[in-house]
Image (cartoon, rainbow, N blue to C red; front, side, top):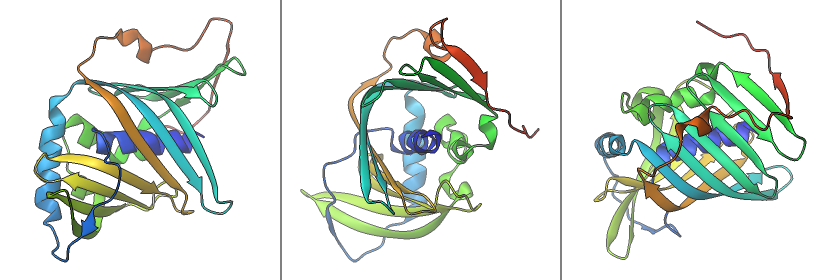
Length: 231
């Protein structure tokens, strides 16, 4: 469960805007991935706050089982994110600069996971902050052109330069003219597929920053997962 939302957070950081409904048809020419990703990275620095509805589709490779969840996402720079799942089970994942907090309303418990810097999100946080380049932490696997309704898209597939059991590769579909990523697919080492669709995007909404510090109702049991934090 925690791995799924970690990859979801990475997906949001890389996605940032609505995915399109379907993949365009392929052309033969190959896009300049470095140039296109640099343009996308520049454009994603302009929204300090975001709120969006999301649908998560997670497909288990071995059991061929698909899990669909829905909820609302809140994001604020430099490194705050909250996922409020509404169905099928109510829960919240809250990211601050150092800790992931999981609040489960069905079991009335809160679990704290420290040392976010050692997590898979470490790949994407510099990109979210506008301080890094994707190709410094990811290796280009392939790039292809697509077209749909006279709009040109680049499909760019990346893999982490540092091997991770949480993430095998990412495929990004980019609207080159708008400098926006329209779809993303994340695949882990077990070939499980995690796809996030974002809707009702609200740029720079008003919300209380305290939502990123919440630990759940006072009657919830709170526990901390012990980890070895690296300096």
